[in-house]
Image (cartoon, rainbow, N blue to C red; front, side):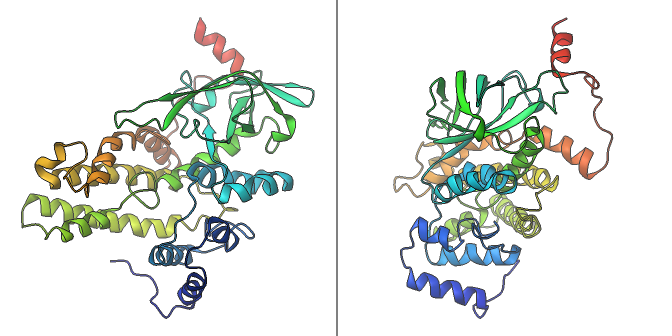
Length: 385
Protein backbone atom coordinates (compact mmCIF):
# COMPACT_ATOMS: atom_id res chain seq x y z
CA UNK A 1 0.00 0.00 0.00
CA UNK A 2 1.28 3.46 -0.91
CA UNK A 3 1.14 5.78 2.08
CA UNK A 4 1.59 9.54 2.29
CA UNK A 5 3.13 11.58 5.16
CA UNK A 6 1.23 11.24 8.42
CA UNK A 7 -0.77 13.57 10.66
CA UNK A 8 2.34 15.42 11.85
CA UNK A 9 3.15 16.69 8.37
CA UNK A 10 3.06 20.54 8.52
CA UNK A 11 1.14 20.71 5.24
CA UNK A 12 -1.63 18.59 6.73
CA UNK A 13 -1.69 20.64 9.91
CA UNK A 14 -1.93 23.89 7.96
CA UNK A 15 -4.81 22.55 5.86
CA UNK A 16 -6.67 21.22 8.89
CA UNK A 17 -6.38 24.59 10.59
CA UNK A 18 -7.71 26.30 7.48
CA UNK A 19 -10.65 23.92 7.13
CA UNK A 20 -11.41 24.33 10.85
CA UNK A 21 -11.65 28.07 10.22
CA UNK A 22 -13.71 27.47 7.05
CA UNK A 23 -15.96 24.51 7.96
CA UNK A 24 -18.23 25.11 4.96
CA UNK A 25 -15.71 26.53 2.50
CA UNK A 26 -17.34 28.17 -0.50
CA UNK A 27 -16.08 27.66 -4.06
CA UNK A 28 -14.61 31.17 -4.01
CA UNK A 29 -12.75 30.46 -0.75
CA UNK A 30 -11.34 27.23 -2.14
CA UNK A 31 -10.25 29.06 -5.29
CA UNK A 32 -8.61 31.90 -3.38
CA UNK A 33 -6.77 29.37 -1.19
CA UNK A 34 -5.49 27.64 -4.34
CA UNK A 35 -7.18 24.33 -3.56
CA UNK A 36 -9.34 23.86 -6.66
CA UNK A 37 -6.42 22.97 -8.96
CA UNK A 38 -3.44 23.08 -6.58
CA UNK A 39 -0.80 22.16 -9.16
CA UNK A 40 -1.58 25.28 -11.20
CA UNK A 41 0.87 28.16 -10.69
CA UNK A 42 0.08 31.02 -8.37
CA UNK A 43 -2.20 32.95 -8.12
CA UNK A 44 -4.52 30.31 -9.57
CA UNK A 45 -3.07 27.38 -7.64
CA UNK A 46 -0.23 26.56 -5.23
CA UNK A 47 2.48 25.17 -7.54
CA UNK A 48 1.94 22.02 -5.49
CA UNK A 49 4.29 19.12 -6.16
CA UNK A 50 2.88 15.56 -6.40
CA UNK A 51 2.84 14.51 -2.74
CA UNK A 52 1.45 17.88 -1.70
CA UNK A 53 -1.36 17.49 -4.23
CA UNK A 54 -2.30 14.09 -2.86
CA UNK A 55 -2.19 15.41 0.72
CA UNK A 56 -4.60 18.16 -0.33
CA UNK A 57 -6.93 15.56 -1.85
CA UNK A 58 -6.95 13.55 1.38
CA UNK A 59 -7.48 16.57 3.62
CA UNK A 60 -10.32 17.89 1.45
CA UNK A 61 -11.99 14.48 1.67
CA UNK A 62 -11.46 14.46 5.44
CA UNK A 63 -13.04 17.93 5.72
CA UNK A 64 -15.86 16.86 3.37
CA UNK A 65 -15.00 19.84 1.16
CA UNK A 66 -16.29 19.60 -2.39
CA UNK A 67 -14.43 21.15 -5.29
CA UNK A 68 -16.48 23.18 -7.77
CA UNK A 69 -17.45 21.06 -10.76
CA UNK A 70 -16.09 22.25 -14.10
CA UNK A 71 -14.23 19.23 -15.46
CA UNK A 72 -13.58 20.41 -19.01
CA UNK A 73 -12.79 23.93 -17.84
CA UNK A 74 -10.15 23.09 -15.26
CA UNK A 75 -9.05 19.82 -16.86
CA UNK A 76 -8.66 20.82 -20.52
CA UNK A 77 -9.18 24.55 -21.15
CA UNK A 78 -7.60 26.26 -18.17
CA UNK A 79 -4.12 24.75 -18.58
CA UNK A 80 -3.93 26.02 -22.18
CA UNK A 81 -5.15 29.47 -21.16
CA UNK A 82 -2.51 29.70 -18.45
CA UNK A 83 0.31 28.92 -20.87
CA UNK A 84 -0.89 30.61 -24.05
CA UNK A 85 -3.66 33.04 -23.08
CA UNK A 86 -3.18 36.78 -22.80
CA UNK A 87 -3.26 38.45 -19.39
CA UNK A 88 -6.70 39.81 -20.26
CA UNK A 89 -8.00 36.34 -21.17
CA UNK A 90 -6.67 34.84 -17.94
CA UNK A 91 -8.19 37.56 -15.77
CA UNK A 92 -11.53 37.32 -17.54
CA UNK A 93 -12.02 33.56 -17.80
CA UNK A 94 -10.04 31.77 -15.06
CA UNK A 95 -11.69 33.16 -11.86
CA UNK A 96 -15.28 32.14 -12.79
CA UNK A 97 -13.99 28.89 -14.31
CA UNK A 98 -12.36 27.87 -11.04
CA UNK A 99 -15.57 28.29 -9.01
CA UNK A 100 -17.75 26.52 -11.57
CA UNK A 101 -19.69 29.67 -12.31
CA UNK A 102 -19.12 29.39 -16.06
CA UNK A 103 -19.01 25.85 -17.46
CA UNK A 104 -16.77 25.01 -20.41
CA UNK A 105 -16.77 22.48 -23.24
CA UNK A 106 -14.17 21.36 -25.78
CA UNK A 107 -15.13 21.63 -29.46
CA UNK A 108 -12.62 19.31 -31.14
CA UNK A 109 -13.98 16.07 -32.65
CA UNK A 110 -15.65 15.93 -36.06
CA UNK A 111 -17.59 13.17 -37.80
CA UNK A 112 -15.54 13.19 -41.00
CA UNK A 113 -12.16 13.53 -39.29
CA UNK A 114 -12.63 10.47 -37.09
CA UNK A 115 -9.48 9.64 -35.15
CA UNK A 116 -7.45 11.95 -37.43
CA UNK A 117 -8.40 15.10 -35.56
CA UNK A 118 -5.99 17.31 -37.51
CA UNK A 119 -8.09 16.58 -40.62
CA UNK A 120 -10.91 18.75 -39.24
CA UNK A 121 -12.90 20.82 -41.71
CA UNK A 122 -14.70 23.41 -39.52
CA UNK A 123 -13.60 26.76 -40.98
CA UNK A 124 -12.91 30.09 -39.28
CA UNK A 125 -12.49 32.89 -41.85
CA UNK A 126 -11.08 36.26 -40.78
CA UNK A 127 -13.40 39.18 -41.50
CA UNK A 128 -12.00 42.41 -40.08
CA UNK A 129 -11.95 42.19 -36.30
CA UNK A 130 -14.00 38.95 -36.31
CA UNK A 131 -13.84 35.36 -37.46
CA UNK A 132 -16.81 33.70 -39.12
CA UNK A 133 -17.15 30.02 -38.18
CA UNK A 134 -18.98 27.32 -40.16
CA UNK A 135 -18.91 23.59 -39.55
CA UNK A 136 -19.88 20.81 -37.16
CA UNK A 137 -18.45 19.18 -34.04
CA UNK A 138 -19.51 15.95 -32.32
CA UNK A 139 -19.07 14.10 -29.00
CA UNK A 140 -18.82 17.45 -27.23
CA UNK A 141 -19.31 16.85 -23.52
CA UNK A 142 -21.37 19.46 -21.63
CA UNK A 143 -22.01 21.60 -24.73
CA UNK A 144 -25.67 21.80 -23.73
CA UNK A 145 -24.83 23.53 -20.41
CA UNK A 146 -21.52 25.26 -21.18
CA UNK A 147 -21.19 29.03 -21.23
CA UNK A 148 -17.88 28.92 -23.12
CA UNK A 149 -15.94 26.46 -25.22
CA UNK A 150 -12.50 26.07 -26.71
CA UNK A 151 -12.73 25.59 -30.46
CA UNK A 152 -10.17 24.46 -33.01
CA UNK A 153 -10.98 25.45 -36.57
CA UNK A 154 -9.18 25.63 -39.90
CA UNK A 155 -7.98 29.14 -40.71
CA UNK A 156 -5.69 28.28 -43.65
CA UNK A 157 -6.68 25.40 -45.95
CA UNK A 158 -3.66 25.88 -48.23
CA UNK A 159 -1.00 24.57 -45.85
CA UNK A 160 -0.59 21.14 -44.26
CA UNK A 161 -3.45 19.96 -42.10
CA UNK A 162 -1.44 20.46 -38.91
CA UNK A 163 -0.29 24.02 -39.61
CA UNK A 164 -3.52 25.73 -40.69
CA UNK A 165 -5.50 25.34 -37.45
CA UNK A 166 -6.26 28.06 -34.91
CA UNK A 167 -7.50 27.92 -31.33
CA UNK A 168 -10.38 30.06 -30.07
CA UNK A 169 -12.56 30.85 -27.08
CA UNK A 170 -16.21 30.83 -28.12
CA UNK A 171 -19.32 31.99 -26.29
CA UNK A 172 -21.82 29.13 -26.62
CA UNK A 173 -24.72 31.62 -26.63
CA UNK A 174 -23.52 33.26 -29.84
CA UNK A 175 -26.18 33.34 -32.60
CA UNK A 176 -25.74 30.59 -35.17
CA UNK A 177 -24.73 27.84 -32.69
CA UNK A 178 -27.07 24.86 -32.41
CA UNK A 179 -26.51 22.11 -29.82
CA UNK A 180 -28.16 18.70 -30.22
CA UNK A 181 -27.78 16.26 -27.29
CA UNK A 182 -26.89 12.62 -28.01
CA UNK A 183 -28.76 10.36 -25.58
CA UNK A 184 -26.73 7.34 -24.46
CA UNK A 185 -27.89 4.00 -23.08
CA UNK A 186 -27.66 5.21 -19.47
CA UNK A 187 -30.39 7.73 -20.31
CA UNK A 188 -28.09 10.74 -20.06
CA UNK A 189 -27.10 13.28 -22.68
CA UNK A 190 -23.46 13.96 -21.76
CA UNK A 191 -22.40 14.12 -25.42
CA UNK A 192 -23.64 16.56 -28.03
CA UNK A 193 -23.45 17.55 -31.67
CA UNK A 194 -22.73 21.23 -32.24
CA UNK A 195 -23.43 23.08 -35.50
CA UNK A 196 -21.96 26.46 -36.52
CA UNK A 197 -23.79 28.52 -39.13
CA UNK A 198 -22.05 31.86 -39.83
CA UNK A 199 -21.06 32.26 -36.18
CA UNK A 200 -19.19 35.54 -35.57
CA UNK A 201 -16.55 35.54 -32.84
CA UNK A 202 -14.23 38.44 -31.91
CA UNK A 203 -10.65 38.23 -33.11
CA UNK A 204 -9.64 38.90 -29.49
CA UNK A 205 -10.90 35.38 -28.72
CA UNK A 206 -7.99 33.86 -30.60
CA UNK A 207 -5.59 32.14 -28.18
CA UNK A 208 -1.94 32.41 -29.12
CA UNK A 209 -0.94 32.90 -32.74
CA UNK A 210 -3.16 32.33 -35.74
CA UNK A 211 -2.56 28.97 -37.50
CA UNK A 212 -0.67 27.63 -34.46
CA UNK A 213 -3.62 25.90 -32.82
CA UNK A 214 -2.57 22.30 -33.39
CA UNK A 215 0.26 22.50 -30.86
CA UNK A 216 -2.18 23.84 -28.26
CA UNK A 217 -4.76 21.19 -29.20
CA UNK A 218 -2.21 18.46 -28.48
CA UNK A 219 -1.53 20.01 -25.09
CA UNK A 220 -5.25 20.15 -24.36
CA UNK A 221 -5.63 16.49 -25.33
CA UNK A 222 -2.73 15.52 -23.07
CA UNK A 223 -4.29 17.45 -20.18
CA UNK A 224 -7.65 15.85 -20.96
CA UNK A 225 -6.16 12.37 -20.76
CA UNK A 226 -4.58 13.23 -17.41
CA UNK A 227 -7.80 14.69 -15.99
CA UNK A 228 -9.95 11.82 -17.30
CA UNK A 229 -7.73 9.21 -15.69
CA UNK A 230 -7.25 10.81 -12.24
CA UNK A 231 -9.42 10.31 -9.19
CA UNK A 232 -12.54 8.20 -9.64
CA UNK A 233 -13.20 5.43 -12.12
CA UNK A 234 -15.57 7.49 -14.23
CA UNK A 235 -13.16 9.83 -16.01
CA UNK A 236 -11.79 11.29 -12.81
CA UNK A 237 -15.11 11.25 -10.95
CA UNK A 238 -17.16 8.74 -9.03
CA UNK A 239 -15.92 5.90 -6.84
CA UNK A 240 -12.61 4.03 -6.83
CA UNK A 241 -11.80 0.38 -6.32
CA UNK A 242 -11.11 1.24 -2.68
CA UNK A 243 -14.73 2.37 -2.40
CA UNK A 244 -15.84 -0.97 -3.80
CA UNK A 245 -13.75 -2.79 -1.20
CA UNK A 246 -15.35 -0.63 1.53
CA UNK A 247 -18.83 -1.36 0.16
CA UNK A 248 -18.15 -5.10 0.21
CA UNK A 249 -16.79 -4.84 3.75
CA UNK A 250 -19.89 -2.91 4.87
CA UNK A 251 -22.02 -5.78 3.55
CA UNK A 252 -20.18 -8.30 5.68
CA UNK A 253 -17.32 -9.19 3.37
CA UNK A 254 -17.09 -11.93 0.80
CA UNK A 255 -16.23 -15.61 1.03
CA UNK A 256 -13.22 -17.17 -0.64
CA UNK A 257 -13.77 -17.85 -4.32
CA UNK A 258 -13.45 -16.34 -7.79
CA UNK A 259 -15.19 -13.07 -6.88
CA UNK A 260 -12.85 -12.47 -3.96
CA UNK A 261 -9.85 -13.21 -6.18
CA UNK A 262 -11.14 -10.74 -8.77
CA UNK A 263 -11.66 -8.09 -6.10
CA UNK A 264 -8.12 -8.61 -4.77
CA UNK A 265 -6.69 -8.40 -8.28
CA UNK A 266 -8.65 -5.20 -9.02
CA UNK A 267 -7.45 -3.67 -5.75
CA UNK A 268 -3.80 -4.42 -6.59
CA UNK A 269 -4.27 -2.91 -10.04
CA UNK A 270 -5.79 0.19 -8.46
CA UNK A 271 -2.80 0.58 -6.14
CA UNK A 272 -0.42 0.33 -9.11
CA UNK A 273 -2.38 3.10 -10.81
CA UNK A 274 -2.17 5.19 -7.63
CA UNK A 275 1.60 4.84 -7.79
CA UNK A 276 1.62 5.88 -11.44
CA UNK A 277 -0.50 8.87 -10.47
CA UNK A 278 2.25 10.05 -8.14
CA UNK A 279 4.50 10.34 -11.18
CA UNK A 280 2.01 11.82 -13.61
CA UNK A 281 0.49 14.47 -11.37
CA UNK A 282 3.92 16.09 -11.21
CA UNK A 283 3.35 17.47 -14.75
CA UNK A 284 3.12 21.13 -13.80
CA UNK A 285 1.20 23.59 -15.93
CA UNK A 286 4.44 24.96 -17.37
CA UNK A 287 5.67 21.41 -18.07
CA UNK A 288 2.86 20.02 -20.13
CA UNK A 289 2.18 16.27 -19.86
CA UNK A 290 3.47 14.27 -22.80
CA UNK A 291 2.85 10.73 -24.07
CA UNK A 292 2.76 9.45 -20.49
CA UNK A 293 -0.76 10.87 -20.34
CA UNK A 294 -1.78 8.42 -23.08
CA UNK A 295 -0.22 5.55 -21.14
CA UNK A 296 -2.11 6.62 -18.02
CA UNK A 297 -5.47 6.71 -19.78
CA UNK A 298 -4.80 3.45 -21.64
CA UNK A 299 -4.30 1.78 -18.24
CA UNK A 300 -7.00 3.59 -16.24
CA UNK A 301 -9.97 3.14 -18.59
CA UNK A 302 -9.90 -0.68 -18.79
CA UNK A 303 -9.40 -0.69 -15.02
CA UNK A 304 -12.57 1.38 -14.61
CA UNK A 305 -14.58 -0.97 -16.78
CA UNK A 306 -13.19 -4.00 -14.95
CA UNK A 307 -14.18 -2.59 -11.54
CA UNK A 308 -17.69 -1.64 -12.69
CA UNK A 309 -18.18 -5.12 -14.18
CA UNK A 310 -17.00 -6.65 -10.91
CA UNK A 311 -19.38 -4.46 -8.88
CA UNK A 312 -22.35 -5.72 -10.90
CA UNK A 313 -21.26 -9.32 -10.44
CA UNK A 314 -20.89 -8.73 -6.71
CA UNK A 315 -24.48 -7.47 -6.61
CA UNK A 316 -25.73 -10.81 -7.82
CA UNK A 317 -29.33 -10.90 -9.07
CA UNK A 318 -29.91 -7.30 -7.92
CA UNK A 319 -27.37 -6.23 -10.52
CA UNK A 320 -29.97 -6.85 -13.22
CA UNK A 321 -32.19 -4.12 -11.77
CA UNK A 322 -31.85 -0.54 -13.00
CA UNK A 323 -31.21 0.92 -9.55
CA UNK A 324 -29.85 -2.14 -7.81
CA UNK A 325 -31.03 -3.05 -4.29
CA UNK A 326 -34.14 -1.41 -2.89
CA UNK A 327 -32.09 0.77 -0.55
CA UNK A 328 -30.36 2.33 -3.57
CA UNK A 329 -26.91 1.73 -2.08
CA UNK A 330 -25.59 0.22 -5.28
CA UNK A 331 -27.19 2.69 -7.72
CA UNK A 332 -23.92 4.51 -8.39
CA UNK A 333 -22.27 1.28 -9.48
CA UNK A 334 -25.18 0.37 -11.74
CA UNK A 335 -25.10 3.76 -13.41
CA UNK A 336 -21.33 3.56 -13.81
CA UNK A 337 -21.62 0.09 -15.33
CA UNK A 338 -23.97 1.39 -18.03
CA UNK A 339 -21.60 4.27 -18.76
CA UNK A 340 -18.39 2.22 -18.67
CA UNK A 341 -18.29 1.18 -22.36
CA UNK A 342 -17.63 4.86 -23.16
CA UNK A 343 -14.48 4.93 -21.01
CA UNK A 344 -12.22 3.43 -23.68
CA UNK A 345 -13.67 5.67 -26.42
CA UNK A 346 -13.92 9.23 -25.09
CA UNK A 347 -10.82 11.42 -24.83
CA UNK A 348 -8.93 9.24 -27.29
CA UNK A 349 -9.80 5.65 -28.08
CA UNK A 350 -7.66 2.86 -26.71
CA UNK A 351 -6.44 2.17 -30.24
CA UNK A 352 -5.28 5.77 -30.74
CA UNK A 353 -3.58 5.78 -27.34
CA UNK A 354 -1.70 2.57 -28.14
CA UNK A 355 -0.42 4.11 -31.37
CA UNK A 356 0.90 7.10 -29.41
CA UNK A 357 2.52 4.81 -26.84
CA UNK A 358 4.12 2.71 -29.59
CA UNK A 359 5.52 5.65 -31.51
CA UNK A 360 6.41 8.16 -28.81
CA UNK A 361 7.30 5.95 -25.83
CA UNK A 362 8.56 2.76 -27.46
CA UNK A 363 10.10 4.39 -30.53
CA UNK A 364 8.34 2.15 -33.05
CA UNK A 365 7.99 3.37 -36.66
CA UNK A 366 5.33 5.96 -37.40
CA UNK A 367 2.42 5.08 -39.64
CA UNK A 368 2.98 5.94 -43.29
CA UNK A 369 1.56 9.42 -43.97
CA UNK A 370 0.09 9.32 -47.47
CA UNK A 371 -0.73 13.04 -47.22
CA UNK A 372 2.82 14.15 -46.52
CA UNK A 373 3.77 17.16 -48.63
CA UNK A 374 0.14 18.02 -49.47
CA UNK A 375 -1.85 20.97 -48.23
CA UNK A 376 -5.15 20.22 -46.51
CA UNK A 377 -7.07 21.35 -49.61
CA UNK A 378 -4.94 19.15 -51.90
CA UNK A 379 -5.45 16.15 -49.61
CA UNK A 380 -9.21 16.70 -49.68
CA UNK A 381 -9.20 16.86 -53.48
CA UNK A 382 -7.13 13.67 -53.67
CA UNK A 383 -9.62 11.85 -51.43
CA UNK A 384 -12.52 12.83 -53.71
CA UNK A 385 -10.87 11.39 -56.83
